[in-house]
Amino acid sequence: MKAFLILEDGTVFTGKSIGSTREVISEIVFNTSMTGYLEVLTDPSYAGQAVTMTYPLIGNYGVTDDYESARSWVDGYIVRELSRIPSNFRCQGSLEDFLIRQDIPGICGIDTRALTKILREKGTMNGMITTNEDFKIDEVIPKLKAYEVGDVVTRVTCKEKYRPTDPVLQSPYLHLGGYQSEILGYEGREGEPYRPGRGLSVALLDFGAKRNIARELISRGCEVTVYPAHTSAEEILASHPDGIMLSNGPGDPKTCTDIIANVKKLYDSGLPIFAICLGHQLMALATGVDTYKMKYGHRGGNHPVRDEETGRVYISSQNHGYAVDPKTINPEIAVPAFTNVNDSTNEGLRYLQKPVYTVQFHPEACPGPQDSGFLFDRFIKMMRGEQ
Image (cartoon, rainbow, N blue to C red; front, side, top):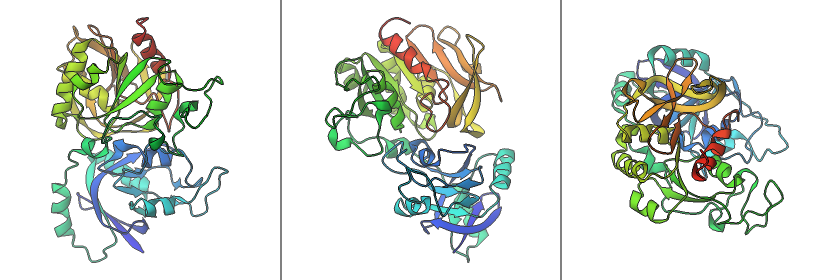
């Protein structure tokens, strides 16, 4: 079946329908990762967006158990070629079947490199994926220009607080970095069963958290409790955690006004805080720093970031369309911790008056390099008062 991708500048790509055949309007973005497409599809940070994969062949190892959440959150999926015969010893099915089950409309057979060039030159824009061959471009364009991503954090966050080890929340796709539920009897990385309460307690605010954040914390012996995004600071602090983790998530951080107010209270508490991606932006806004929408964002597994303290460069996994404006940082409150080597955008902040450290990139990776996984160790030391 024919499918069409219509951009708000009037550009039309013609290809073949994959996945669901329903029509969708969404923000069109691109990801440069060569692998890890399942993690991309199940990353809640892509809610409200249709993802273009720049690597030409997608789906060659099928669907494996590498989910970053219980379902796919992307609005649409755009690829050059979709592999029809996946091959991998972990393969549980084809990507085409996954898209159908998840009701994700997609299009293949288009020049994704040409599409990416348009987005790089003109910036991220809205688009429509449709199988309607009788579409009228003059009627579609106003709809595309009117589309807004909206409050996607509320859509993707958990509905109530939970412990990742609760049996009802266990999933065949959740591996917790080597430690799995003690109820299931699995052993940890060092042959020691994971036992809640034996380590530091961490309150993880779920703005669209990837599961690997919990995996990284639990693999370091932390007891993790996940809270919905709109949980009050008072409720979180009443649980007396040793530290607070602010997760990644989708959308414009400035729309999260009530969350920003809560983050400011958490900052004022003096507890150690580590924040990733959207959490980094929300902490910045809570402390008087501004954010802005990037032309086309950073999405992929090969972004170099420089540690401003040591000068060392790490290759990072990233997924964001907004950034912190370094010109608005109060030097008495925070200093840049990391900077993007490619475009000099801010990639992290080290706060001077509180034990708070935030990064724009993903030290939990998945997909991507694990160069910056040491930041979780730094967070552990912060909670122990060693750093």
